[in-house]
Length: 295
View 1 (cartoon, rainbow, N blue to C red):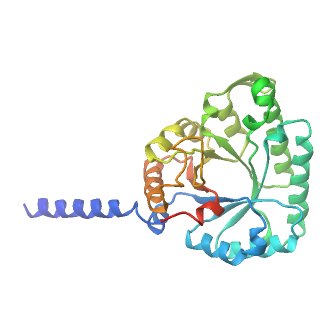
View 2: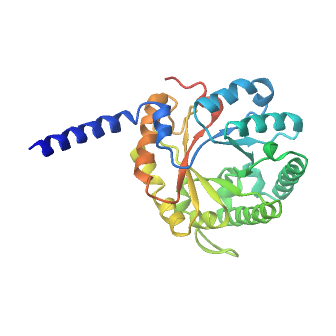
């Protein structure tokens, strides 16, 4: 009888602790698997408000930032920001891309990005260097997706192949953003045939899935295929969520739900995929919105 009572007490303690795990950012971080990442699109912030940005990232225990490249900003600014981020264990990835990059002129944009990153890293100390390249291209926003989807997909694939080659040349990992519904897009072209989501996962080092839903059960469901496939081919997946206002539907973003609710949902996603070796954490889109979220 004594043994039975002790067991019940232990179970109660576990339940209480488990319930608490879904409340605060710090408690979510205690169970973080891999990365806690975010996008930083307005690069001017690292000039105007660098101290507050770094403090926010540290307080939120972010360990990875996708920072959009603005070549008009002095390299010294990037060096200062990246070195201070590195001191807090935060890796900075060079972020760029646009739907127009799958058009003919997109090759030049890609070349410009990799040339800039290569030159910058070569001229910087190790603690000041970018840790990788992160592309956000979104070919479905290109006008070609509507009138010639197959050709646009092939152009997108060609762009990623070029990016893969260039990333290898400068010895940096290559990552991309990808919508969850690419696992419903089929292709049959010079790159073979299959599901676009699987093809993308095969070509890059890591994929951040834009799993923009505001309930853990929905997020878990829409990334299930990609995580199963990534585990099979030994690749990594980061699951991204949205914090900005959206007109696409009521269940897209955590904008109106607040940070406490978001942390609860993220902890459930973490728990669900904790044993999947392909699951490498969560990403929150994006830091400018996240900083202004309601509690």
